[in-house]
Amino acid sequence: MVRRGIKPIERLRGLGAVRDPTRLLKDISTPQLSDAVKSVTGENRAITSLKSVNGLMVAGRAVTAETSSRDWGTSVLAVDAADSGDVIFIRTDGDEMAVWGELTSMAAMNMGIAGAVIYGSCRDLDAIRGLDFPVFSRSHVPCAGEPLAEGSINMAVECDGVTVEPGDFIMGDESGVVAVPWRLIGDVVKEALKIKEKEILIKDAYGRGLTLSEILGLK
Image (cartoon, rainbow, N blue to C red; front, side, top):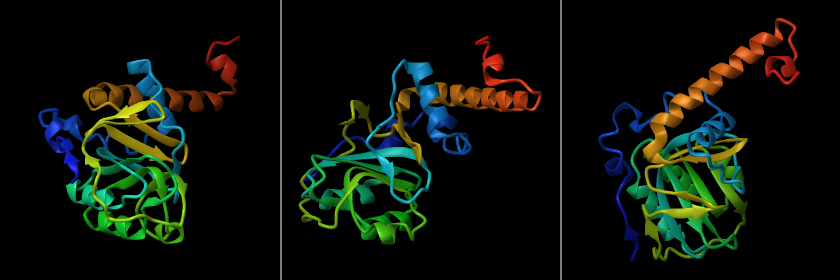
């Protein structure tokens, strides 16, 4: 029996326009977002072992799940628990078996889910790379377990020292994956946009013949 916590949409009710910051951050990179999170929280919240499977960017609210690598049934139920625009975020206890693949990707894509982040293994990489659906994982193997459905959904999970709660904002691209605490998303959005603007000004200064050390005041 799967244990269930609060849905992200319920947790974020009342946050207003920043409840879903995806539109505001559509042109932001994960390095810029990571810098913004560190500026606001003093913490690095990149999940360093996760890599992109198909080179696509993902951004959205986390629907979290945790289970064993033998159990892909919890992954299927996590898809059912998600709303359009959410990101499925699954933590497993190992990489020996895949809990995500082509069929779960297609099911999620058909529901309007933004993408999947698997702190464990996925499979069917060739097929996933042919889909317009972002997938990130720690590893990949061809074998899978059983539909045991014995994990948890929408409970806090910890990956690489970063705690991810349901409703946290997840962003991933080829540089990596960053988790933003849902309570701080408004402050982080503002800081990320400031960082982006600062980088634009630095690039403009290159056109005036300045070096990076001069722009940054290092000499």
